Length: 126
Image (cartoon, rainbow, N blue to C red):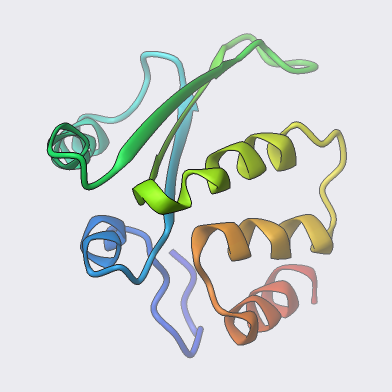
């Protein structure tokens, strides 16, 4: 987890932020069948909210990319009125390149504010 940022990142806080209406989208990604147990348990908490209608879930499996030997499993949870962000994230992640503009768009979709994205872009890209 990055340190030295003047704001709290969403990692490990996604569900609480979403239930408070402060985060519109959460995304988890790992090799298919390889999510760590702690993440699987955390996602079960999300799934309870999906079952109650407070969140929607989308699973996406991406075939191995160049040089990869695994299928990427992306799981996204969104507030029901923000489900459009899932499609926008899928489109963004399909890009063959990754630039600061892509990084910014990902932050926007995940619910980070512009000033936070400004700092993050500077942190990552110098």
